[in-house]
Image 1 (spheres, one colour):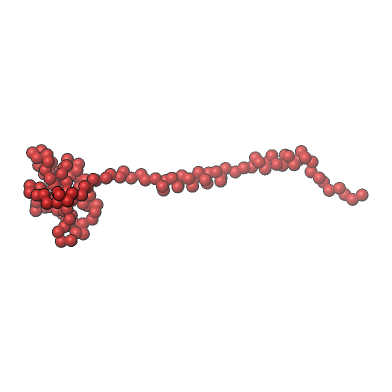
Image 2 (image 1 turned 90 degrees about the horizontal axis):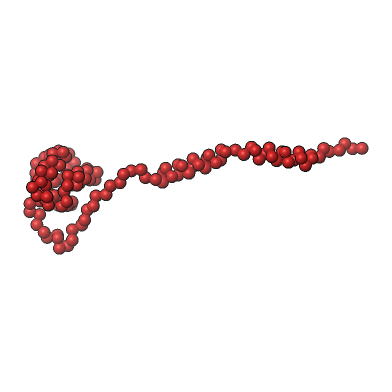
Length: 143
């Protein structure tokens, strides 16, 4: 009589299947969670974006007089207020003093060619913080 091949019993097969199910790993789940975390970190913006509102003048306002307006020139190495070299703090204090007597004082800001945009924005932001409501950005006449 030939030796009988050992046939596993149904109970043995069920116990093996139960052991296989118990070996489920959490590694793929953790990998997916980390991938989602990285995706949302890269897709989100944590910077505080502030907008400076600049309105383009209307066609009719283009011919209005700039008499009495303060001219701030932003150069790559300095700031000039009506031809006099000043620091950013001195500029802010002088304009704040001027705004106490004339709250509707018009201020013109003219960045020179080659000035970094961030430097011009820093001046505009400081003037807005002082309380300038009539603020205009003008182009350099050479361009």
